[in-house]
Length: 635
Image (tube, rainbow, N blue to C red):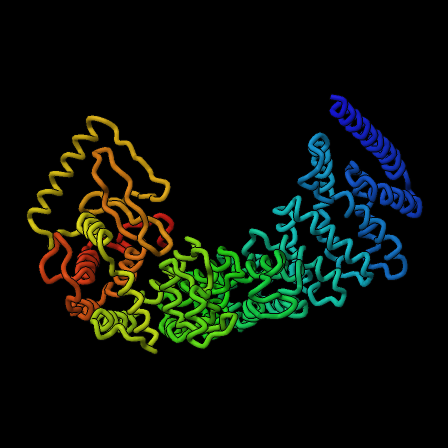
């Protein structure tokens, strides 16, 4: 109790003292404003403005009033072109206006914030109409006046953005003056000009186009290069955020950025992220938070360049760097997922870019699981860096397997890896046929030997994901039977039993509400299709996960392991709209005894393929028509 009382007393004393200082500053401001309104001589006015400027350094939220602000602005307009006494007059005037227009911070005292915000609004209302006069002062040779004017214009745009943008657009070449500040020799003015430009182009496509056609891309990227890319800190972050704003949902700026060859100038951001240097700490120490912010902004700029009608073709430079980021365990999961998402956008329906990914290689340092076996094969104490085909690495990521990590793969990374594979096969008829032919060869017993062909290794991994044993196979077959869209290959007994089961479910739903019992390890989502309701596979890290949740009728619901579900998604994409691919994959001979309940002569893999063909042929199935798994989101 004593401690609480002491704290309360201290708080009250501090608050009282602050209020006394504020009231003293306001009373002093009122006297100075009154003297300024009455003063007639320019020297007397300038002396009072200096006193107000000194007071504004200590207490920036001064209610200057319309008459006093008008006198300050009139002095600026009179001496803006005065080479003799211009600097002596302009410096205190601009400094005063800059101080009283500072935004109220978010962590401001909640008791005084409303009053200070009202004072700020009134001050900006009086200053904003003279924004064009201030833009003429902005080109002043004096760096102190120039810096204060740039900060003042940034404050005006922060508080009265729409009005200020309207006035600036009405003046010819006013926007170009701001862009010209990026060429100034002084780094302080140049850095503040970046902030001014960010505020000026915000939510205004017209100004964005003017700025872009004035050569801002080259100037901004030159600043990032001079600052050292990821080493540049906040300055480079400001440049990337400026580029992101200019390119977001602006088709003409995107085309201009690509046509002027600026995309290749973003590659050093990506290569520097995975470079093993002492400053970077490479794969081991990871990047600092500030460097991660810069890298995220650079990736966001790339993402804005890849809409549905993108024109980026620098896949040879971009794909290796993006794959290096996606395969680095030192990177956060969100950055790995973002880089994979960009790869998917880059190769989608682009044959040349798709070929770059197929020939790509990923370098990893695999985890040593069996040390004795590692030594017997000639390995050293530490694991060496090894190369993997990009296709195989991405499929393993989608299946939740990462050889370079002891833990599991993040669900978002798994989703984006699967998206890359599907984008690689979309509208890629040659690639679809090659994958299906490799699948046909890989499903035979003679094809289990290692292969140097990337597509063949991909097919081998895919076949393994579609092959299960024991109870998992039975449960997966139950899932396949109940989740089929078309019933052309179902026996009449299965059809009748399914219809009876649906009728029983409808009667139970009418009699009593359905209760869903969710298991902690298995999350199932209902997806409606043409043949009724089916359950999605269990979300897992590439392995066959636990049992399905129980329903109100105490029957086990259909279940499908995540690895099988991923394999089905890939094969479905490989045969979509491609009759030759379907014929190639249907030529796969049986290679295993049929599980109970399946037609004699069907291997499990062939059963999966026939079910997939049913889904692909069905008119109601779109892209990704198979049940959605929790965590696997379709575009």
